[in-house]
Amino acid sequence: MLIVTGIAASILALLYVKLTFNVIGQRRQHKVGLGDGGHESLNRAIRAHGNLAEFAPIGLILIACLEYNHAPYFLTVPLAILFLAGRILHPMGMKDGNISWSPRVKGMKLTLISLIGLSICNIVWISMIIFGYSMT
Image (cartoon, rainbow, N blue to C red; front, top):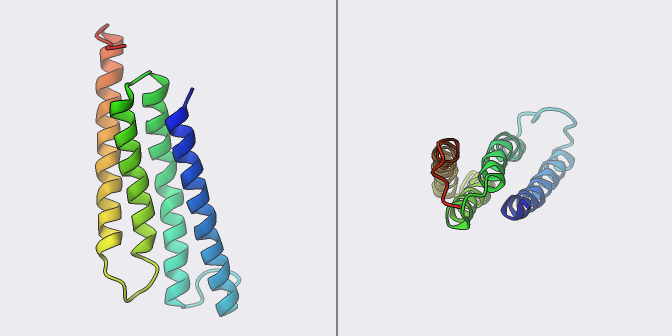
């Protein structure tokens, strides 16, 4: 069972829907059907939504690979939490032009650190399986 992946995917899906509604609201407010119409707030909403769409798939694939290959939860859960935290923080920093870049930067740092960690754990874990050193 892919429990961690299922929970992570569900949280990311809810965030994706929220960001979609943000884009829809901005489009209605500015009466823009396509593109950003030169409105900075709409551009930020579009990019926050797009950024999640760009990063969520690879993160979920890496989490699922660890889980599918029976990596222990002490590896999978913290990395999944880091990834989710990064994905939640990033759009918070893009919401308003006056808000500090801090949440956005922290979000990207957590996202990238978690992706590196997930990648390394997958490579090491799968190598251990291939060469018969599995801990399960």
